[in-house]
Length: 200
Image 1 (tube, helix red, strand yellow):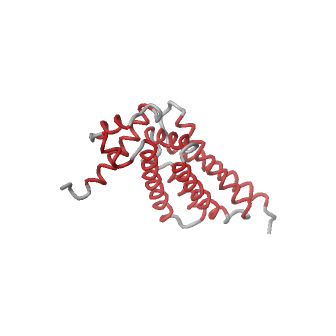
Image 2 (cartoon, rainbow, N blue to C red):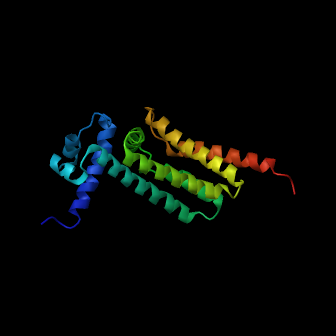
Image 3 (cartoon, rainbow, N blue to C red):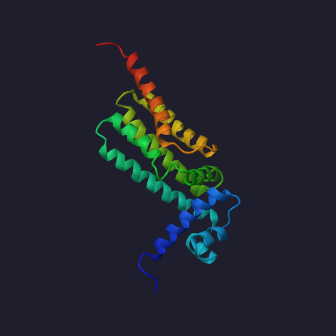
């Protein structure tokens, strides 16, 4: 009989292998057999667990989204003001385990596949809606609702843009520089809003 937890261990191994294989070969060129070999399991086992390459990518992204959510929640648990919570959300999106070349390549593949794969598109919409909602809630401490929505969208676009630019770059990842870039945008917007408020 298989050891307790063996299935979960194999699934995790296959997800890690998928991230590495996409980084090395690109999503279009990588095969299920190559992923299985990298994970040290049979090709049949990959199909048994995931069914298809698209389903394997979806499982990989669910895993990465779960890890991303955990990182953000950990930061939010330490934040006590709306501004600190915005910073926690930004920092969580550039967490050490997320903002690295192999994971960035997997995210880029996820974005591309979401255009044609319903399950991936649904996952991406959930991620985008959650990010926008969390940011909007905290921006409302500084802005009316409509402006908070606009700034949340702008901040989310900055986060996504930094990720995409890094995916297309040969430069080494620098999470602190990435965080600073988004924080600068947020600070500029908050300062502008504060300056426009009538003095008491």
